[in-house]
Image (cartoon, rainbow, N blue to C red; front, side, top):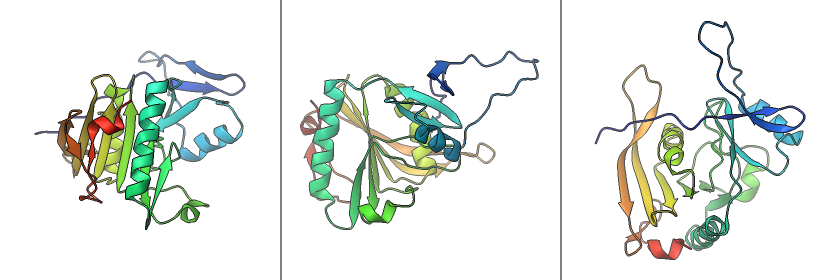
Length: 217
């Protein structure tokens, strides 16, 4: 199949004193240029508590605010995290809703990232590589399987799962490949979908299988 990448939803840009507000791009010909945040800027805003209790992520220099997760999201996240910790208990660290840098203008903020090493290996740095990334999707499916997939492919993540709560299935993306020269991006060549009765396994632990139903609320 030929991979395609489509834009994410309209971003939300932070206001220095009162949190995020929606911003409409300036009309053509005005001479105005949208400001693009770097990861360093983004982290500094977080330290200043601009986002308060909101969950956010950064894509292409634009800051997005994620809707507060509902119980089904939290349940699927907890079930998946619990299972992955039984699989990756040596030589890997399972990170939940923590930073993950892709270049200087992207921190997609994955729900789960399985990275090599230990917790202390990331006490002074944010990971830029992972053996598996998982997103739990209830209202964000379109962005998770397009814009975020492109970023994780660009980071060389070999195994990317999206748990689709609405349709009760798991999307698995593999085989990141560079798109045609000039696009400056990478996409996944393989996109498979599995239902509740199917079993799946991480590429990095192929003998550790789990039923899709066991990851769903």
